[in-house]
Image (cartoon, rainbow, N blue to C red; front, side, top):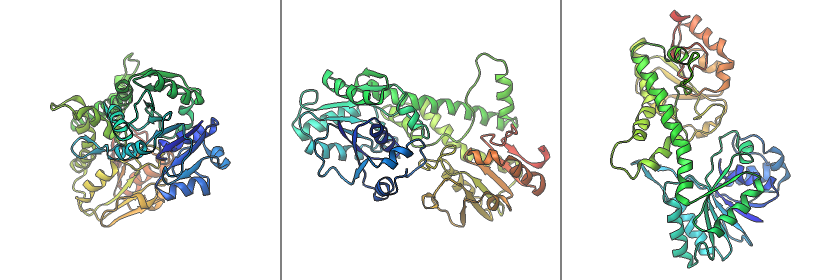
Amino acid sequence: MKIAVIGTGRVGLPLALAFVEAGVEVTGIEINEDIRNTVTIDKTMPFLEPGFEDVLKAGKLKMQESLEGLQDIDCFIVTVGTPLLHHIETDLSAITRVIIDLARRIVPGQTIIMRSTTAPQTTEYVKKVLEKNSELEVGKDIFLACCPERILEGKAREELFSLPQIVGTQDPLSAEKAQQLFDKLGTEVLHCDYITAELVKLFNNVSRYAYFALANVLSMIAIDYDAEPYEILKLTNHKYPRPITSKPGFTAGTCLRKDFGMLSEAYWSADILISSWRINETMPKFLVESAKRRWGDLEKRNIAVLGYAFKKDADDVRDNLTDKLLRYLHRECPSQIILHDHLVNEAEVIQLHDMKFSTDLDQTIESADLIVIATNHSLYTENREKLLDQVKNNQCRIVDLWDSLDTGKVFLDNTQL
């Protein structure tokens, strides 16, 4: 079997490598030359995703810039991005370009797998675009399936070979083709139609987004009453059979921060998902305003912000909420803002005037009046005593929404130590 994975980012590249490991001949289609060179020349991952080192070193994954020259491909897997536009509208431009390109090249017998996260009815739209531009019939001449990705960043190698694979089709031949492909990974395959497959992925992500919003809004309420949310959660859950399992934090990233819009786009009325969006997006400003209420103006303060990636121990900065936090802090006209993240490339940081970036934690916090832990990287937990010493010895204050320092307090100063 020969397949082409179109888009070898954080979704496409792990999938391509998993199929290579399973003995499939794979070509990755990637317009970014740096990614192609990193994979084929350096034989390393262009981002943090452990488990594929041996597969990369073997050099069996082919990479090229476009579909030109590809021969005898059995299956095309589409993993391009599907961002949300500013007005809660799904952006289908990348998918449309890829599908039109495929439609002009596709020949009878080939299969297209939609792997990108898509709004309801997108696969049906893809079917129409394919048939319009190829004059071939899906289910008879060519085949189409929606097979959503549901892996967790950092655990792709484990989950690609273990998570059940949802396969959405509208005809038996397309279902058979998709089954043959994912049988290579040895996972359980669950069949359904297009719309069900699309909704499964969105339900997985959006339910987490809404649940995190519940934890965040409860924490905001507690903080507004000058109560400690972590103390409340501890007492709430102690030997209680129906605990609140989520904790407050920045709810961000390219899936959680946008996928709610794919369900809310078609509805004129307010809904729980829009409310969840407002809660989660408000958290950066809420923290800044709450810090000012406790400790006074932030003007002329030295502020250290720890963490730029959107999630713990990752290097993925897409759709993070730290950018928003930095902008709100910047509006307070502090003496300086130093941003620290030891896993992130400085070139990916959106710079603000007078803001500095550092990968050295000691240098970042040494003169800080205020430290805000924006990402719960393990490094900050490992340096708990060092950070708490800044509070004890230097009159520094810490905002620790994640409770990375295990104090049970979101707003921490020396009076509490």
